[in-house]
Image (cartoon, rainbow, N blue to C red; front, side, top):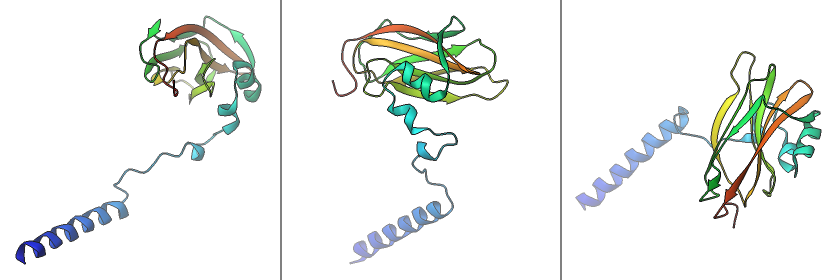
Length: 157
């Protein structure tokens, strides 16, 4: 009986600690992209680079001011390391578009004035495709592309 009482007391103390941590805001919360400032769900419904540019109100222009870093061959499409950087002036957003993915726009990153537009992340790719590094500067969507070959698809493939 004492052992049972001890276990009940331990559970009660554990629940109290978790409750206090939650009340104090110390537990992690789920990130909600839809709550982010400037969130535009239509961007992530776009199927091509041209559609992304149209939604952003920009003209797509190939440029050497944007560069993409990634492998020539990705053994696993579920975790493909990709980096994007830009040397163009006035960049307000950089992103990654994968031509043959179910959702073409994979990620966007807003930049502040004076910040160096340079990010690295891991993306999912359904199959071998051109990957576009994009940078929005004024009314232009500067881009550069690289073909990345995928041997094992990461988007349900």
